[in-house]
Image (cartoon, rainbow, N blue to C red; front, top):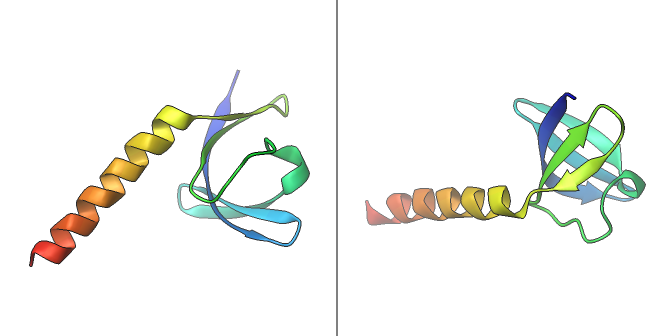
Amino acid sequence: MKRRRGVIDRFEGDLAVVEFGEVMEDIPKSRLPESTQSGDVLWFYEDGRVEMDTEEKQQLSKEIDKLIEELWED
């Protein structure tokens, strides 16, 4: 079964702005897990299921922290 990886960029009203690589899409909040927050990594399956990936979110957060540290070192 095919799936797409999305990252929650932000919320605008009843919509979540989700980044799928280079493309941003508006997804109704009602389709997402209840505890979804900005920065969460989600898997969107072709059957309509949406799953949160906490391990991927932690890894992404570490990568961002490392980039920020590198910027401040200069």
